[in-house]
Image 1: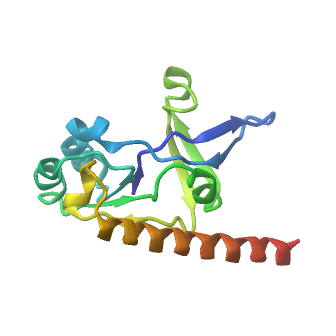
Image 2: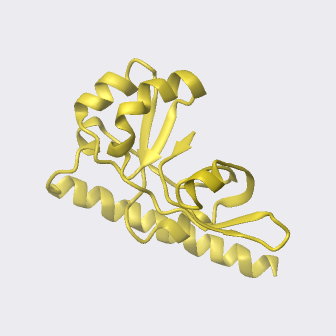
Length: 155
């Protein structure tokens, strides 16, 4: 799985890394590299914030049997960050910096939403999409509440 995001990361005194939040970034900026990425990595799931056209989806995702997942949007990076269990590796940190490096994360319960082809384009929000987003926010709130309860129990 590949997540188009800009992690809020820190380098700890012992040289290890901590990622606290993972706000999604728009995937359209990576569209021209998708075919090569799918072939090189074997990845078949991409998570991001959208912005790709239906043509990109048909040209790159469909032939590679890949799917696109999206997050709800701004403000959910901290909630998604709760699913990060550990940083397994980081690549090109010195060359690219914290926000642009390639991070390998061990995650659990990373909540996303399947993206329909037409929804991958940024366009005016229709009534059904508003309802979908409202249901997604409700689900994320329930997830956050259950995570908070689990954290209190674990203390």
